[in-house]
Image (cartoon, rainbow, N blue to C red):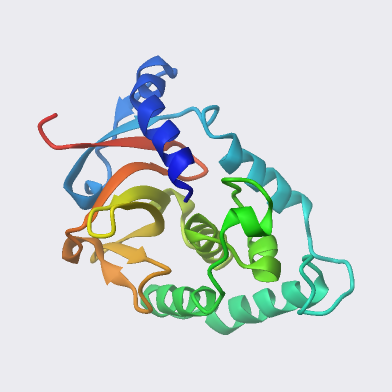
Length: 218
């Protein structure tokens, strides 16, 4: 997550939440990192997210090629399918751990090197071919778990501020019966959100809606 993009998003989100159609306070799931959440059923403010989804559904990875290629091809698609087949039918905890561990093996690469722009949200195929930064890890995990049958309404990409490092960051949050599990490219193991004190969410998003997060009482 690029700092410049994060500053723009942080400044605009409260206004976007107020002006978007039919905002509603989320109540069906536990609050993320103890924040107050405002749900908005309008993805228009997030073209990087919707654009990524459009590219994802359009790219089947059918072109022949090698896994060393920096363009998504059937070799990358095969590796991804093998991961899904390996984890299919296992319990949710095993799937979360398996997906997190697999994707975290990728090399962290900033968007300016990969794409020549400050902020780019890559598809899982692009991530498997060229690696990526924090939101790309989270997206790849989100769409892999979707392939495994995990309810996308119970998953969110979370853009947040790391209060320890004082930088923007992104993770995947998965709502389970045991709480909220965080899949983080900075941590090899999955971790419960309740055990994390240094993350302050700004917004979270999935295919259904997006949520603005505020400190309780504000």
